[in-house]
Image (tube, rainbow, N blue to C red; front, top):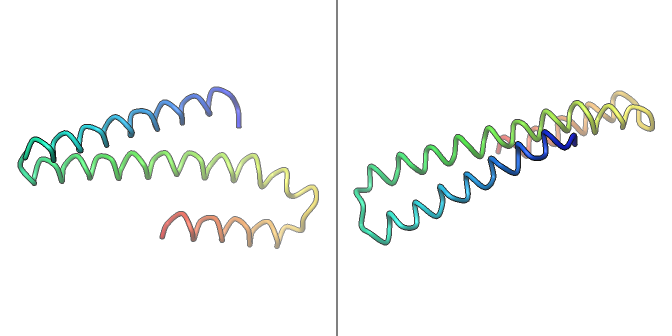
Length: 88
């Protein structure tokens, strides 16, 4: 993973961590459920975006390198397995 991409992903994960801690504080403070659910939806979207970035990186870099040692069919199969586990 290129250092810039890695730093972007780590930055996103730290932001998600902060959002989760904020949700914990909201629960402890008995904040309205609707407000908590809005924040949970924001975390879900942020996690999905981060996962998508990691998946893209995997497809571009890792699988491209795999083509040197594996057949195209095996690489596509691996990509589909990763995608299937990501979207569950």
